[in-house]
Structures are given as structure tokens and as C-alpha cells.
Length: 417
Picture (spheres, rainbow, N blue to C red):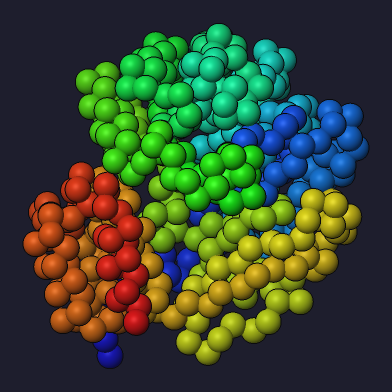
């Protein structure tokens, strides 16, 4: 019989958790698609009844998930998009329903854009039990916002951030760097501006120019200078230094927070905690046990592979199809089954996104289910390259490891082979 360390036993509990610990709900509706966006979202007229029908379908699916125990240990809820705030009152109704289905959730987040985050909606969301708002600001330069295809102004973003803080929410501001027209000075001004609004959390992302988007069509394969990898790295370093000086600690490669203001839902994705995603394009990561529970309401799903320890699913039904689905038995999914070894390699890769790195229990587990020498040699190589460092019993990414994340994450995932 295998002998497990105390740390590894704690990790193994996550691999056998029958309930999701995080719930994601996807609302794919927007007033207008942004120039950089390749997400599962669509421009929608405010009076389109599809939004209400879609929310009603999600409420039915929540009932089904709760009935088979998939939400019994759910700790966080996150409503993303699209632009959830664009949906208006039905968003608050969905939040209220989700809280009833997952009564142990203590962090409830909604994404919002400044142009649709009205005072009325702030009150409705607060009354429904929303605790946290993630506001898509992207920039506090009107010229830069225009280039990105955003429909709000810098002044509107400042006003809505301040109003959300005043209303008592934990507020996160999302910002984007290495974008058209941006300079070091305008980047600093955007960072200082959102900090000045009193937010407790800031997420910073370099622009990715995706095929099929207006920016992709505009720049194609030209690799514009404003988006050069060195510019991206430099702006991320500026953000790190400025946010640190303002009292924000980095806890994930792109996320900074004041003490106690980390987004626990996001951390679930990097720490092997199973999560359930509902909605078009929504992804789930479930244990074998959780997947078997899901099959009780989704009999169309196949039996898991013999050696499967983890299952990844993505709903591939479009918004009209999902809105018309009477139950989860009508849905369609892309599936991926992962063995215990593949799950361990994936967890090492994801753990390297966090400032506190990889837990000792995960390393113990990886050394047991993967080739022990390969794990040790890979970590030693990454240490020699300055990508990771030992901190007590943990392996943690360095700043160089974050800047060269593709190399670091690739080395971890290669262990699955």
C-alpha cells in the first residue's frame, strides 16, 4: 500500500472532491464587441429577449447541479462574460439564485463595464448578495480606449469605480498594457488613476492581438512595436513596482491586491480545486467523482476513461441553443480526460503562476506519480535558469520565471510525457 506524506494527503483530497469548489456562470452579451476580443460573446440589443431566456436556462441548470451535489462545497461564485452588467436586472436575479443553490459561497463576483454599471444595478447586486465587482477599465486614456473599441470614457470609468467602492463592494480594476498609443507615462497614469479610486485589487494584462478580431485584421502578422514582447515585459515591471509602492502585493502573475483582497475564485483555477462552469463556452474541471455526479443530469456524457482522474469540459452550445435547452441533458460538450500523472504535471504548471508557488504536497505527489528523477531534474534545471527558487518547502517562480512563463510552464507540462 502506498505511503503518503501529510502534505500529499491534503493534496489528494482535491483530486477526489465530489463537489465543485468554485462556480463560473457565463453571460455572453455585450453592447459592442471590443477591437481585441475573441471571447465567447456577442453584441446584443438591450431589448433582446434572448438575454432573459438565457438567464432562465442557467437558473434551471443550477437547480440540476445542486440536486446532484455538485454545489454542496462551493466556496466562490464568479459571473463573467461578455459584459454581465449589460444584462441589468436579470443579472441580480441570477446572482440571488446562484447564492441559494450554493449557500456556502462567501465570495460572489460579477464582471462589469463602466458604461452599464448604474447606481440602480449596484444596489440590486448588493441586495442579491454580490460581494465583489471586477470592472473592465483597460485604460484611463480616452484615445487609448477608442483604439481598443471601448465605449466608455476615462471619466466614466473613474466615476463608476468610485461608486462601486462607496457602495461597499470589493472592487477590482482590469487594465491592459502594450496597447496602441500607450506610453510609459499614460500607463502609469492609468495605474495611479484606478488606485486613486480606492480599489483593493488590480489585474494587468498585456494585449494579445488575436486572429479574427478588428485589431488582428488591422495589424495582421506585422508585430507592431507597441506590442513587442519587450514592451510587454517592461510595462508589467512598471506595474509591479508602482503597485507595490502603493501597498498592493502580487499574488498571481497578473493580479495584485491589498491585504485580504485576493480573488479566491481565480486562485481556485491555479490550485487544483474543481470548478463547474455553466453557459456557452464555459469550462469545467471536475474530479472523476464530480464528473460521475454530472453524468446523472447529463446522460449524454460518455463514461470516463479507465485511468481518468480529472475531466475538463467545455460547453459548445451557442447562446440560442443554450437558452432553448430545457435541461443539461440537452447540452453538448468538448471533453478531455486526464490521468493522475497528467493532472500532476498540469498542477505544477498552474502552481507556477502564483507568488507562493507550488505546495510541498503537490511536489510529493508529482514525484510519486511521475518519474521521480524527472521531477527533480526539471525543478533543478528551472532553478539553474533562474526561473524558480526554493522558499522553505515550496518552489516559487521568480520575476524572470514570470517574464519567461512560456518556458517555465512548458517545462512543467512536459513532465506529463
